[in-house]
Amino acid sequence: MAQYTFEPFKIKTVEAIPLTTRAERAQFIRGAGYNVFHLPSRAITFDFLTDSGTSAMSDRQWAGMMEGDESYAGSRNYYHLREVVQDIFGFEMFVPTHQGRGAEQVLFGVVAGPGKTIPNNTHFDTTRANIEARGSTALDLIISEGLDPTNRHPFKGNMNVAALEELIRRVGVENIPLAMMTITNNAVGGQPVSMANIRATKELLARYHIPFYIDACRYAENCYFIQQREAGYRAKSIKEIARELFSYADGFTMSAKKDGLVNIGGLLATRDPGLFEQLQNRLILTEGFVSYGGLARRDLEALARGLEEALGEKYLAYRTGQIAYLAERLLENGVPIVEPPGGHAVFLDAKRFLPHVPQSEFPGQALTIALYLEGGIRACEIGSVMFAHKDAATGEVKYPALDLVRLAIPRRVYTQSHFDYVAQVIANIYRARDQIRGVKIVYEQPRLRHFTARFEEV
Ligand code: F0G
Image (cartoon, rainbow, N blue to C red; front, side, top):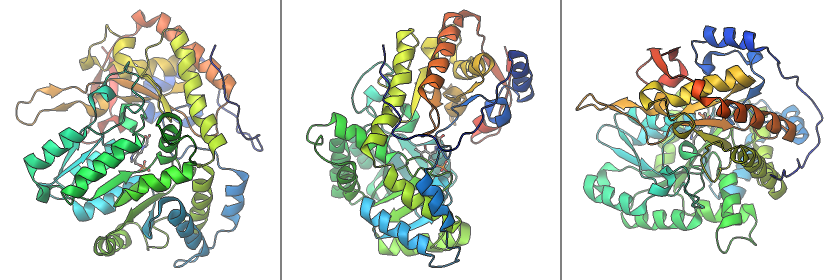
């Protein structure tokens, strides 16, 4: 029987969760065009759509909100955030942004452009879209183990360093303005990257003088996995591991809505003074002045405090333990998931869950709909709806290697009994999986279609 690591906090404020009947859910999902992004939150009992901006803040963070100094420039909350960013990441030059894609938009608005290629272990969809919107190519170079849902490699998020070198030789240093590493690697299951892989990637890039940027959304969870799984890190604190990890980086983007434990916010940092000037100029044009980056100053204070809290080892043990617990309960019932579970989510393997539904009929989407209908659970398709695309040359539809459904767990929000219920619902769906049919798209947009697409059953 799976073990549950208890919450290292008690609850001060509660929020009622909506309870609905199956008939009500059937009506809601039809009205939403069978796309859970269109559902109102009042229709949802367990919201696992994302772990982004959905966390519960602590009393200490809320107290900090009251100490917001809403000065346009030079607010004391900005200076506090600066101290924390320097302390954890070791970066002097940084700006806040309204969220992760704000940082991406500013960075790629300056460094990307036609003919450029930007590799990553795996790009998140907004990162890819921001790069492609500038006419550049976004390339994923993950190790092959990362694409095998049952391979229990401890660092399945790793970069394929040999493939990266091959890419550099093929397209030329001058066409790679920077290379990225996403930690944890969200798109393949929230899988961590090892320190050895980060070091090897840095060493390779340094030889070619290519800047190395980290997509740092879930860096604290990644550092916890390094502490637990990588030789030589057991005795180190999470902050020491983070300091080492970021010492290899020339810059980073961060959606602070994850390991910043805030509902809104982001960061962008660099070590290049010339580039920093350009980034600041673009930030002022699109996000806001350099000392607030599109956020209320009280949000900067909540972020400064949240960044510190997310480094807590008791918190990270509970956090990753909660994900492992849900995963274990599902495995006990034979449910196919990505193994081992990552840091922020359990990913159902829709291809193995619904082997009778071909990728052209979106098994991940079909499963997402079933989760909602059966349990009021909102999950996120991370598969063919999100990633399938027409090959520009041949017109042939290319399907992604994995068709996944992500149950992203908000931080400090749900409890063990919630997970027991959710695991039971999913086990029931799995037993009756033969009855689930595929879907077809009846409306879509050319970019990031998963947000707005509408579906019908086939
Ligand atoms: N990079 C990664 C790895 C992400 O997971 C996200 C967001 C972003 C960048 C963009 O950050 O949303 O603050 O603009 N991920 C969320 C998710 C949306 O559900 O995984 P953002």
